[in-house]
Amino acid sequence: MRRWVSPPKTTAGLGLAAISYVVVDYLRHLSPTWHERLQPALWSILALIAVSRVPFYKHWSSEFRAAIPFVASMLFMLTCLLFEALSVRFVTAVLGLDWHGDTSPLPDTGQWLLLSLNEKLPETLVEILRARIIGLHHFLMLFMMLAFSVLFDSVQAPGLGLGARYMFTMAIGRLLRAITFVSTILPSARPWCAAARFRVPAYPHYWAQKYYVPYASDANAIRQIINQDIAYADTGEYLGDYQPDWGSMNFLINFLRPTPAEGASWYSLLKKAGGGCNDLLYSGHMLVAVLTAMAWTEAYGGYSSAFIWLLVMHSAQREIRERHHYTVDCVVAIYVGILLWKMTGFIWPAKDSMRSRRLAKLERIQGRLIQAAKDSDMDEVRELLKEVELGTQESQNKGHSKHLWLFSCVTIFSALTVVLLAFTWTSDG
Image 1: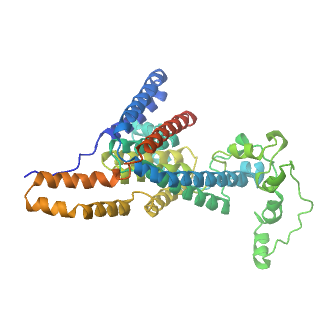
Image 2: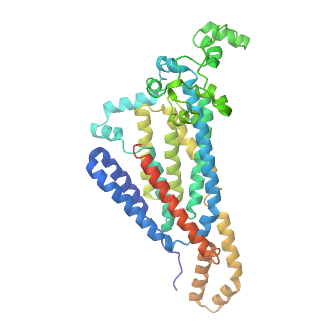
Image 3: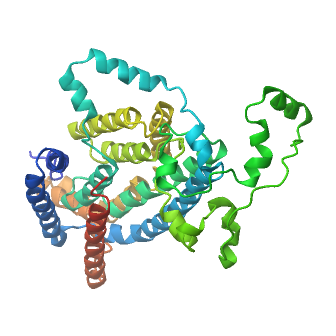
């Protein structure tokens, strides 16, 4: 007697695609000519394969239900990124460029460890650790590949649900990150960064002139302010800042500290914030890397997940080695990313709703299933179980096929456009 089983899922294709993408992209450092040839070819092949699977995809109704949470998560993430950009500019500008150039980096035992290992490990291994194998854009593209793999039933549908969870978790992480690094301003591990990238005033904002500068280094002043709990020092006349006319956004002037050379738009200042030039606890790059690895591990698993985590570890030591972050930034980002991903499981996968729909379908065919079992008609039993498995996803497709086809076309076109834009805008890391 044969047992009916669901079709096997792809176990190696996605992993091979991920490895191929990382290897081909690394050719930019080894052979730019081959990179220019192979990279467009690889992405074209992957895009064509994905599009060819669209007519056979059976879960568009689930994707349709996940569209609203997906859009809401995206808007929430954009809002959090805007707040983060404002915070990045503030922590860089409030103390002035002179503070950034004069303040020494913090002692970092992780940096010491890597320098020590450079002296003890084989030169080949050290060069591998130094190599720019993986970056932020790679992790974003790896997640996009993971989300697209729902077309091959390699990942549980809906893909938009997985994307919603990824963006919602990242938004929470970026919001918590901004609140963290704006709370206490830490010096950069690269003291020259601020002067090279920002045109903020050299002197502190008047908030810092009143509440920080008089008590920054004098032990007696610090002891006295602790005892009095009031800013007692007479700082004289405060040095003022340039005051553009931003209308209703004038309240941002104290946070962004614009200069005449930077133009009249507050939004252009936020776009220039980038990664900032303070130490931003915790690392945003590592947060993206960890969330990608967590999504890959939960949704796909297998040996390719171990490969993704190796890339995460390689990226972490490079962040420390190249002094983009202190070790604490990477360590905190790893456990925050893991905990946040575990806390957002209510978004995807939708196990409870799938179970309820399956049970409802079983109740409807219960009589037929019992009769088939009494008649020892195993073919009929298999067909009924297959009907339950497929019906949970396809039940809402009937009567709405035209709308779902339109939705599927818009979704695929939009997703491929996003992939193309992300690939273009982040191709340099």
